[in-house]
Structures are given as C-alpha cells and as structure tokens.
Image 1: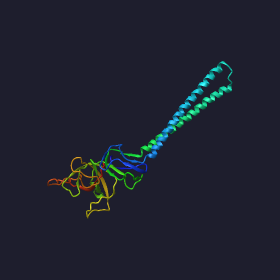
Image 2: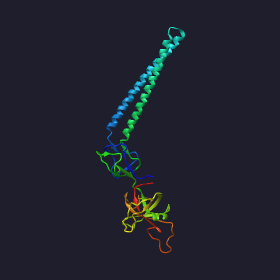
Image 3: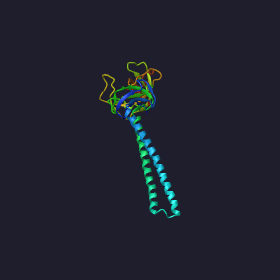
Image 4: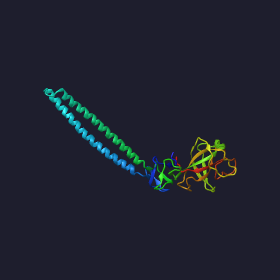
Length: 284
C-alpha cells in the first residue's frame, strides 16, 4: 500500500534548507530538507585523515615484517652450514618475526576500526539530509529554514502523498456493516453537489471497527456509534478534481434485489448504504 507519508527525521537539529515547496512533485531519494551538518562534515574529514594515517602505518609495518622474515631466512641457511650462530640468536630472530606479525595484525585491526568509524561518520552525515521515501507530491510543509526540527514533533514536519489517485475512506455505521460486501460498486458525491457522480473502485475493507469521528451534521445522526471503514480508490486524472482531506458522501451498492418497477435511479445504486467518506491522498 502507498499511503500518505508523515516525513520525520531521525536526528533533531537546526534546519538549514528546505528544498521542495507545497504542491511540488518529488521522486524517491530527492532531498526534502537539510539539517546543520557542519560538525558531521568535520568528523568525516577527521576520520578520513585517520584512515590515511593507519594505512601508511600498516604499509610501513609490512616492510618491517618482510625485513625480519628475510633476516630469519638468511640466518636459517647459515646455521645449516656452520655452527657460528648460537641457538639463542636463532630464537631471537624467530621471536622478532613473530613480534612483527603481531604488530602487523594490530595495525590491520586499527585500520579496519578507523574505516568502520569513517563509515559511521558518513552515515551520520547522510541522515542529516532527509530524503523522500517514494514518489509523490508535497501536501504540507510545516518547517522553514532556521527552525529546529524535533524527532517527535506535535505535527508532521512534512506530508508526502499522491494527488492523482486518491483513497476514499468511507465510514459505514456498524448497524449497516452487515450489508457491505467486498467488491461492490460505489459512488461519491461532493458536499452540496448531488448531480456529479464520481465512480469509485473497491480496494479493501478494514477488518477493525473504530469509533465514529467524521460527522455529517444531520440532526438524526448517531454520534455514539462505531463505524466500519471501507476503502475505495478514485482516479481523478480525468473529471472533477478533489482535494486531499475533502469530505464526500459515499453510496455503496448492496446485494439486495433491484426495485420491482420504475426506472433505475441515476445516482445511488439499488438499496445503497450511505457513508461519510474522506479523501486521504493515499494510493494502494
């Protein structure tokens, strides 16, 4: 499912730049806003210098190790032809090689550790640029350059969504829930506009009944009830355009028989189930 994305940051910090504007289209990976990265850049530079130092130290240690190995080999060849070299001298050269091997391993480990720290510093720098997780349109931008971005803000820093194919989340009162079946046709009407029928495509039924929040204002409406949420999609690339968050009246066709006589109603399907819908800018 592709739903609205409440853009957040994993690091709190001062916002230095906001890249998109409200209504602009972005692609996955595009930068959305930049946090102050001066300290992180300095840390990356320091770690790069440390990696260079450790690399040079390791190279020098390899040379010393090779020299110790070469001396031990020459002494070993001489000991086979004469007894001039004592056993203590042979052991001393052997231990020197082993010591050089140990130091070389330490230098190798130090280099790997500094490379890991450099990778971590680069990651810390990268997360200071918050990027789009998918393609979409900027629906809201609630921060500006110079403001402080928190990890848990009271409202989303940005909202990323889709405006071409909307989702309509229709609330069906629980007493009408048994009449709703998957795959049934449905239509939506804008508030105050009963002439323009907007055909909907069934997406899914959320299998969790929730307290009613969207109210129609009707004097006979029950407010102490729960609702079944049915999700429909609306492709608005052609026809009348809706806005994300806009409320509509939804009528869902039921499995009941059509009227015995008389012409078919031009708007709601036979025995329609009324519901209150809200366009959420989501796409499945």
